[in-house]
Amino acid sequence: MNELFQVIQNSAEGGISQSPLQIIINLSMAMFLGLIYSYVYRITYIRGKKDKILKKEMKGIQFTLLLLSVGGAFIWIVVADNLVRAFGLAGALSLIRFRTVVKDPMNTIKVFYAIIIGMACGLSQYYAAIIGTVFMCFVLTVIYYVKERERKQKKLRKEIQENES
Image 1 (cartoon, rainbow, N blue to C red):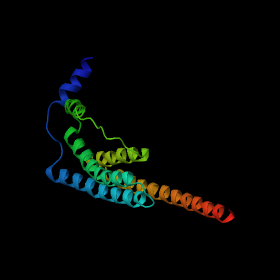
Image 2 (image 1 turned 135 degrees about the vertical axis):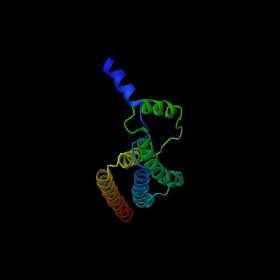
Image 3 (image 1 turned 90 degrees about the vertical axis):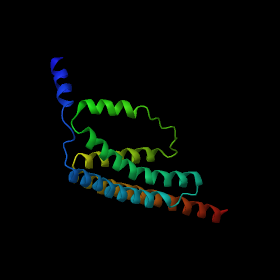
Image 4 (image 1 turned 30 degrees about the vertical axis):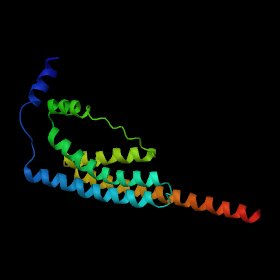
């Protein structure tokens, strides 16, 4: 128990451990990767959607992904290795409640991943952030083409059934 109190006491000392230049680099990297990620999200999501509500949700989530990437980086810059700050931030963030219902469950995962991009940048884990972003964009593209192929096959089957009638 004394060890826990020692960890808390040690984490309460000291300020932000990164230089201003490092903070700018981390936030810029988060913004850049967030832009790429949100752009790939937009390309792989908007086509083929006829539902106006889903299109509106997509536009909102596209910018949310960018903001969450930068916000995630900023959170980790501020928290760093300070346990007291982490608990304080968790308490403050628990006051925020998201009441928006996400229609497409895949969007929840995409939002979560944007936070992870920001976390990696905030912790100066650039290789992990870049490789993870490229890989996630690749996965989004694969999912898009699989869904597009299924949509085309479904359309072709429908046309064949109409021609047989």
